[in-house]
Image 1 (cartoon, one colour):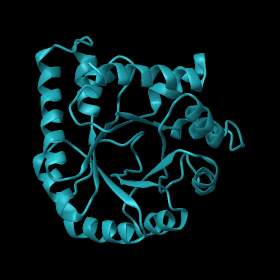
Image 2: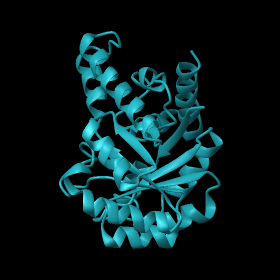
Image 3: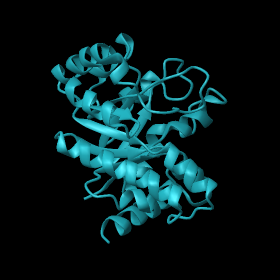
Length: 249
């Protein structure tokens, strides 16, 4: 059954604007859980622009659903992940100037480094995911490196969906969906788990949720944005309803 992981980074973004203790991302995580979230995702960036080290520690202690820690494959982040023991670690590319993660991780271009990082994390008992574009070479290399999960970057799909008038049947949208679907089949054939995320919202999520074999969607910005008007519980519940509706067709 398809699951929803809610990214709460932007709750921390609001907090860091004033460097106070509110709004508390941990409280947001509890509210997301009460709304039906199956997991919580946070991205601990090297510049600590939103989520902080103490957030990760408190989340692992206080949240009763699985925690997915997004991070760069650096020694500092690997050590922190091993110490904090989230349920899943997702290795992502990271640029200091980007507003949010732009594009997938180039696993094929840094295979040896990725393999060493995955080995350290797996030896510590952590499930390791790669955030990659829907490209066959990246998927094959991720499997060779020992990743257990591939999360397909859906940002291109989301952008095309918006540019073509939110028409799920537009040829350009269908072409990108076919590319993601093919990537999902390849991922599953290698024995890895097929997840997806980035840029998904209440209007474009269902075609992705309907793809065969998809296990989890990780969604943040649109849920946090809607929660400003309806609250986190309601925003999470509506997103999960849309996902389950599409997956059950």
